[in-house]
Amino acid sequence: MGRRVLELSEADPKGLVRESYRIEGITLGECRSIFIDWALSLPVGAHTPDALRRLIAEYGLAEPDHPMSGVLEAALTAPEAPRRRGGRAARVAAEPRAEG
Image (tube, rainbow, N blue to C red):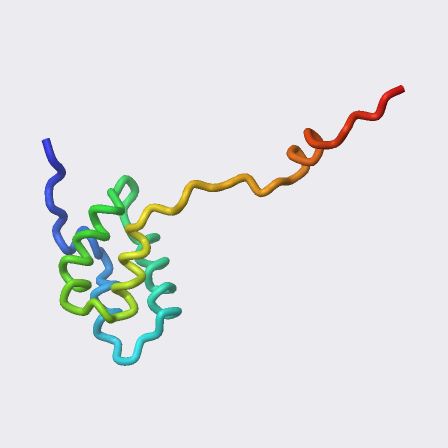
């Protein structure tokens, strides 16, 4: 059984994304800030990828060059798996043990 399609009011409960597309000359930084507010406004348990897809379908496809479209697309892309960069545990394991 598939997921139901989210209503726009569920995907953007406060209308933050809708309003971002209406702001003339909005910057990428402003869109990122609005995105954070949007993410925090989603109800607990909301399926964020579904909400993002709904918003992209509603606004992003019509305005692919808008900075918010890029922010929404980037949010939908899964981040790379974290890689170990080192730290104490890696150094301790690599250090030779002092004898006697």
